[in-house]
Length: 365
Image 1 (cartoon, rainbow, N blue to C red):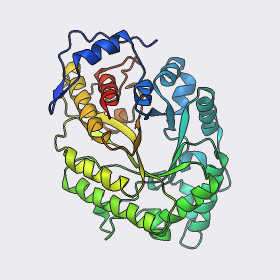
Image 2 (cartoon, one colour):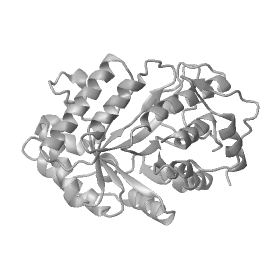
Image 3 (cartoon, rainbow, N blue to C red):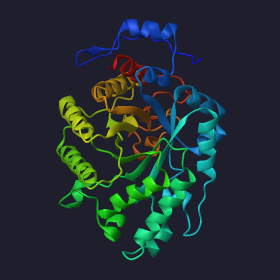
Image 4 (tube, one colour):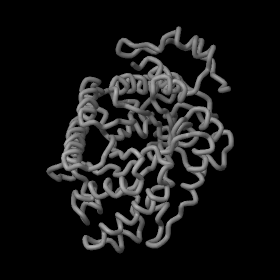
């Protein structure tokens, strides 16, 4: 059973008329549950990203992951540079270990990701061109998705194909894949993935879709237009992954705009998953209590909005514990204090963020 930290001295958290109610916290203390249990009661999946190296080396972390999560995203272990490091070489060792871990502990598994501009290995950059890129792309997807056929709940087939600041009229990122194949690479990737793993859900995944700021407003519109275009041409796409890398200091959140975007996505008969959620704390006070309170508020505010959309089927955080978070390296605090963006602390104990996520699941309709 999970050991729950004392919360009796904490004041209720208020935000926008909602509260982490005393009655809920009292019931939670009497009957501690996992986040996956709270989610399952609402027909949702809760899970997290985790790396082979951490799950295989730290038994306590693996135990807590199994307790809290119903679905696993391999953090980097299925990305191209890891799994296809040389032209004729595939390394499935880490992915296979994770697939067996998921199967053994009755977890679902996501596939992340088949096409992403940041995971292109050196050999591919040196050899790909407009003449051979399509065959290379198809061969990679058929091999990787085919290898895990029947083991994957959902694939992030294409990751982060929109970048409105690149200046393309459709908002497309001028990535190597775009330069080699034009916009058709997205449709190609989905069609090959559907052939290779016909029972998996196929998602487009992206970030910066969360706040009411000019860049993100434009990006939501571009993503929606991309999804409409894919549906119109019969691309076998089943859902949108919203990464939800959120900011603790950011206040420009517009619940109505986000709900309308989600409704527009759902109107295309697409499922929605929050795929990489965390809340970075750079810019928040050093004081842990104040920091944790604000991070908890952000989780609850965001999830209370997103979970109103019936087509949302799951929520995954990008990491479960503050001990293992990409933000330690990529968004460190200026005061050098350890970052605290995730549901569990560095000792794998639940924090206020855990409570907020549980509360959002419990109160969702």
